[in-house]
Amino acid sequence: MESEELRSQILKMVREYSRRSHRSNRAGDDPQKGEFIPGKTPVPYAGRVFSEDEVEAAVGLVGRRSDGAFVGICHDGDDERPNVG
Image (cartoon, rainbow, N blue to C red; front, side, top):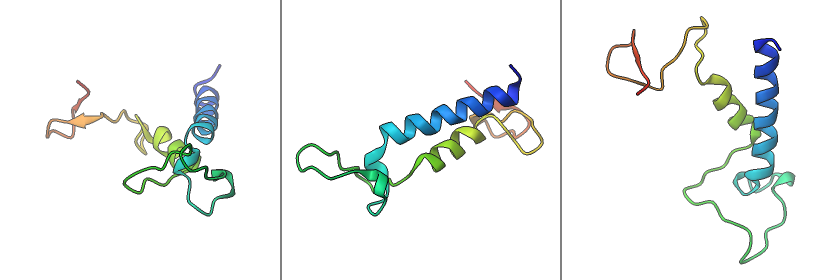
């Protein structure tokens, strides 16, 4: 399997996972949010509102730069050397 094909499948699964697991984080007027059931439906605090679009975008950006170079998770001040520890 080629890298881009694998990446595409991973992002597709990320979208599906997000769609199923984060329904309560969708915007209030989103028809996919589902019915609110008092005492059962979780209410996200701190105003976190997102859909599978944002989750896919975040996952798709991890580890990539526009020139294809690796992007570290955190840096120790030197932009040339990613500090992944």
